[in-house]
Image 1 (cartoon, rainbow, N blue to C red):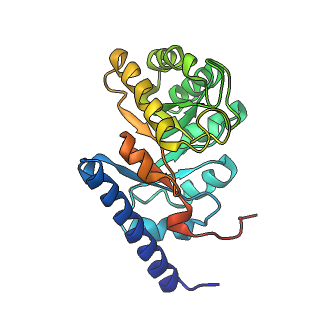
Image 2 (cartoon, rainbow, N blue to C red):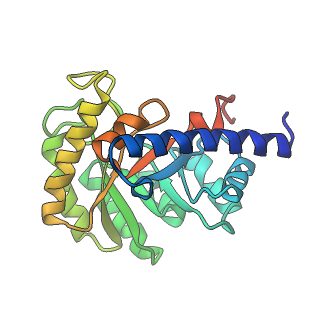
Length: 242
């Protein structure tokens, strides 16, 4: 078991390395470093790591399972953090997620919009929402890792924009493992940017584009992503919790 100061040094070094990568990618793309926000994906890591990251200046963290996220968010509720929920979300977890998440990045069906809206209103909160785009899906089918096909994006965006308690913030994708974009991360992210342009025509404030992870953040920055979601490169590979 590493002690706290060792873990702090390890996370600080990893964060610095990721920061260098983002800075270099921004420079290569002719973008300002401030144009890209780092979200650290803290899934499977303990609340103690979240606390260290907050102390190191991280302001955005992401989780993908409510059963891990809810207790962690509660334990870290004193920290100045924005919590992103990035996993596939079942409607029976919506009430819990709506109580702590600031943004839900995995909106991929109308039923989820309805459920989230109801719980956001009940909790008297406004939830930021990103439409998860599945670039491995048929035009308006569902993707292997969740998400709605490109053809279903604008309709779903309109539903979010009209829903009480919800705010349409933009789009998210995970680079697909199958289909025409498999192994072509930058092309996938550029397609997401095209879809984002279409969404912003109707909803100008929905300008967030969440794309890119530890292995492909450079391609996401090159394509124009505003947020990158990095887990392993910051936290390392550790055994799963529970």
